[in-house]
Image 1 (cartoon, rainbow, N blue to C red):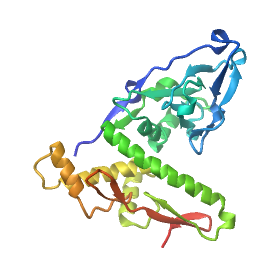
Image 2: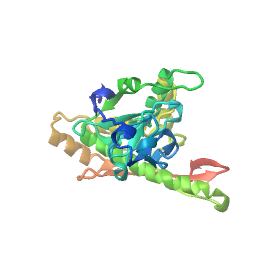
Image 3: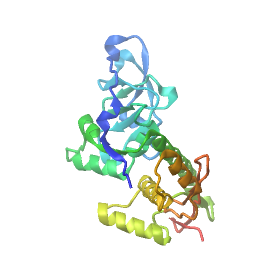
Image 4: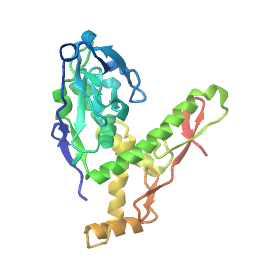
Length: 287
């Protein structure tokens, strides 16, 4: 089975323009995204502020665009990352961020955003950080990191699924915040690493033995994708694009660790999500 190639991040992103607000337009205002503007839990920009150019902080230099991915280079264990929304196109970001602007022909912004949130990326940044009291990484270290690079359509499919998962998780967080008034809550997710499902237990155990940490949703999806394609092509001689699509759309009876079951002819994934509930302050499968 062909594995996705691993490519250094620096070869997949474009340079970002910089400016000097206090010198270039001292009488005007600009929208500033500093390190504190990123919600580290929700991974969104929530605290951008308007600043007079003449009073611009010394780190206000990088002009960002919609779809850029911001990666905080300080305290990488906190994983301060966010994607620039359309309404902040043209804002200025602190040089405390490594600004990643994906080349559209080879890297999808949504896929990149989910990758820089992954345990693999965070662990590498933490390992390469310097400074005991104020650990940090450089832009060079971020750009030297590697990521698996499937074809762009597959990147978009993965990103779309993970975006749906984020929506479910956001709803779950809202429900968890209301636990004091709820006797029982039920949530949906495509992956639950503490599941009693033997396949999930086996996957998690093997992953932890190999990499020393628990697999994320992104890694579970990659595992299922490879297994699904292997089952679909098993016994088939042809591997042309049409033959692969037919094999995938006709595949039935698959049970993935992410709840993946099959694909419709229009490539829509059929997923059986996990039902989760809260008992004693802990997330468990709903029986």
